[in-house]
Picture 1 (cartoon, helix red, strand yellow):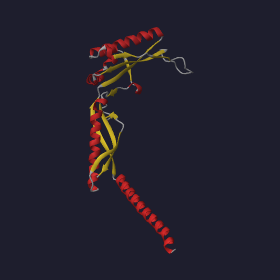
Picture 2: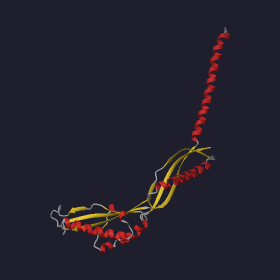
Picture 3: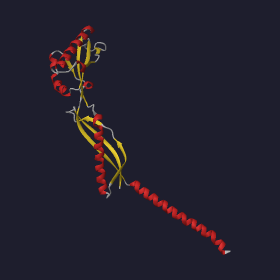
Picture 4: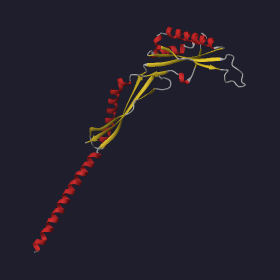
Length: 236
């Protein structure tokens, strides 16, 4: 009778023991997985390069005034022809020049008790040089002051400032990404040495945004290209 009562207890005890062993094995695997996942280093890699602009937008803006519209448009044509002749003589082709529609203002239209300007109509016009001759634009720009002596009233406006552009970014992207990744790996190796470990495979990588900015305000024709990558490495 006693042996009959003992059997269920032994079975229950064995089941609990097996459960504890299994639970311990599971916890051990979980800890090992957590430790493995924790052995990761996240670093940033930087690549920078100075490049020369290969496209320039040079707007030459000028203003004319006249008593009537017919004389105004004649003055616009005369000024435009003088600017065009100056630029073609400097080595720019007509394909590199474009003329925007002038902005005409009736200076008497909104006068309330103020002294009227001597001429009723005024026009602001822009002749745009779009060229890959960056060096020639830099040389010719200071010489454009001689247009004033020819009767062309050159004007300066913020929206008409010269722009230097770098268009070959796609050509240098692959190499710069490789440089940024190599820079990130160097940082990871330094971290691994301090942690008494070694750098393993890349776990994840994210390319940053490419920025192209003027080197400084005095040399806008030289650009600084910059990219940052975010890389996670496994540590062994």
